[in-house]
Length: 176
Picture 1 (cartoon, one colour):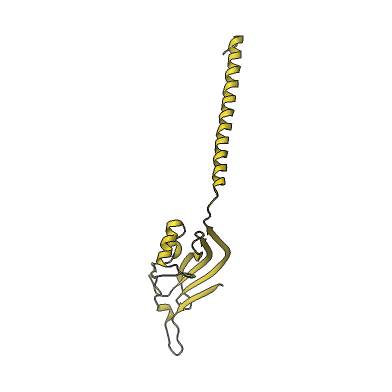
Picture 2: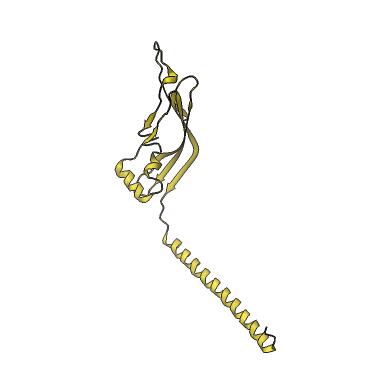
């Protein structure tokens, strides 16, 4: 579901000078879905290091957005993608949300705020680990060996025919 998380200083019965507010902020963690335990995350990092680095799990962690002037509004646009990791037959699958983020700051016209707008992608990524049977390996090895013999046979044939043609020219006395 798309949504917005909006931070703004407003209160009924109070006057707030919105344009003189400094909306600098620091994002400690922003995570969608259930965060894996440290033990499970370590196991997943060892099997799938390209998917479970710290920056993959939480791209905004530790990011600071410092405003140089008062009255700035920050907008963060996040696109989430569900990634399902199936580590093998013994482990249960893990659903994690990867997200991309684009952040912009601009001078506010009516009030300063911080806004996180997120939208879910209709695409899902499935990362699975499946063992291939032994016959798949044997078939691949046979294909490689057959390919090597075919290429070697072609090179031998070309070399033999070239030498034969050159020998024929030599026998006829027409060598260059």
